[in-house]
Image (tube, rainbow, N blue to C red):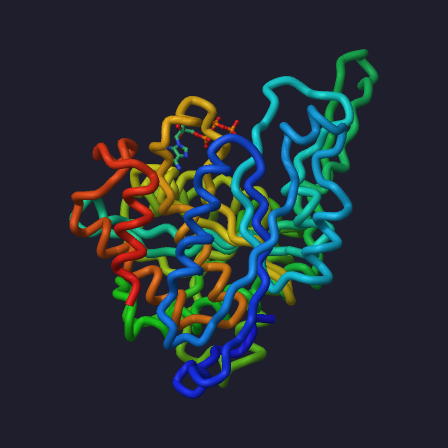
Length: 371
Ligand code: ATP
């Protein structure tokens, strides 16, 4: 599970070397990944971290050139050499392309990254306050793709898909959600938050799907109740997914950590991103027991590629998130603060946030605020 929080007060004498895989992918992935690199290279020396980077291939454009979207070498280097990684973006072809499947989906599978973690935080003074994290189970539910189409007796077609929820996958995603709630509480000393008491909201539709979502709900609750000492400070809540959507848009400020099966988590994540203005500020991390890949939520954005105006903030926040899951919460908090300070000043921002600054100007401004 999540590694222990590390304290940096005693590490300044010995430098810790960390190797980070950089996978820019397609389109603006190539413009925003350098932001993550710049942030890591400019972290204050008090943290005692030294970063080495390795550039790795993946993407639809790579597939068009070589017939491979995710080379074995990329996976091998990540598994054998890297401590963490950043993934930029991948273009999605609008029609089915024979032999192609998404490299990030394959990467999640090959690296055992069973959770997709998406924090959504509003910019101070703009819209409703939001400070939530959606923890989406990433390996099962309807997305196992066990589908079939057949003919009914009357000759019309019927399509069916299996929704699989397992006790083991639900147990590990529930634990991750509770651990994230505790970890957020532990860095609240430095990062401002809306929530004085951490809470986890379990999202389900067990009133209709009593077996599958019923199991998800039951296991999440059992994990909470089985660890009374550890999870003592967390408030346990449940919300049926349709009313979750309603409440998330009406009163997003009440949600802290939200845990959901794959499909609901997917939908809630994109809905929550809409609460905070631009896709260009929303980070995510693909997380397993031993590895995390930071990934901005946006796609390859072909409409702005090459203009130098991609917002780097989603990638910068994803870099902090990667560090958090590697156990380095203190430098992560410094990065979040630098981003918040840039957004609060409301001066140096890319056009998606109403400004006229370039990607590089935003990176420079945030680097300047790291301390
Ligand atoms: P893809 O096919 O890769 O998903 P897309 O254009 O359909 O690409 P996104 O890349 O997510 O989907 O972009 C959606 C919209 O948000 C586009 O108008 C894009 O320009 C904008 N956008 C996405 N990311 C950023 C960013 N980092 N900075 C500024 N605007 C962005």
